[in-house]
Length: 128
Length: 367
Image (cartoon, rainbow over all chains, first blue to last red; front, side, top):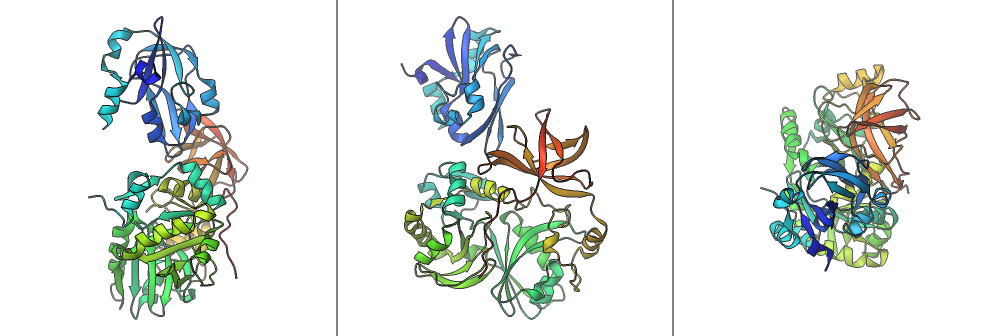
């Protein structure tokens, strides 16, 4: 099963991957990084920080501009991808397996909060 | 409605990411801004800058008229030479920045920013009262191709360019059999040419330059890299680093304002006074000391006090650091080597004031 079959995507181009035990991986979709172009800077939160669904938790900068990244579901940061902070260009290579951003533990009703997220195929269709 | 250059279809077919810029649908990047940037620094790149304005100024009073609207002394501009100028309002603030070329005894070409052409024309016409001068906007007749980089001259030679030109000269020429005006100017800090070509020949010339340029490693370059290239070279961008409330003296452009020009020109009293007594603000270059990126309109602080504002900022692919241009309080204590702070997402990040340009420019070609 490829990664895109397992993720859900937000309209603001974050992906959410369910790792079980109420934990998730969050990152940017391939469409998002393609639109951003060369990614040169990434600012991620501290582990332990808590954010509500829809809140800005990180910032990604391309050569041209800074963009905010929003929480697709409410959660507490368990782990951040240090490699992506040190080499943000890996997001351009692969934003899912190498260039994921944070791992979280859901703090809200994750199932209900996922209701406005789309399966990858539907997300792609929405873009067209 | 968004305008398209004659090369629009070329950009789309090359897979460019297109954006709206100053009312034009233009390529921002073809592959990667950083890759395109390095191509221009190391080899040669081709830009479509046909959105820029071409205004021909001619007539018995053309020289007197131009001397009235720019601080530069156009009387000293020789045939087939070019000069970088600004178009000040009566308060010395800048309506635009321009390059003026002398094409003939009574004929000049003014190249202006796409975003400012309406304001420029309006200002020129208003100021032409009493002058026997013809102001002819022929922007819609020409495409402008920029060939920039250390291999630009070699490529142009290969394509049949025979003119011998130093920097800031313009000559009628033939490239690949096409009649053009070849100007040895650019907006990258590299050597190169800006080629004015009639629209009907622009697609042919674009394709031919990319084809003949292959052995030189040529790539088409979008506006994204155009911006990072000009920033490294610390060349001003109108709308970011220049505006109607900023004078050429404040903008660090005193080198382009002669002190001995006798003719009166718009804003001369303010500009002269600033040359004599100094300005309240000044333009400086900043190099970020961490990985954070300063952007347009971010605030600059020193010792907790707000001292200025970023006007352009971004990564420098050649330095591997983030750089910016900022207007800061004109204070002796705020100078090259000073450490200041930039407010980025509510946190202060250290930056050092450094000399401009950020890289060594290689565009001064003397014969």
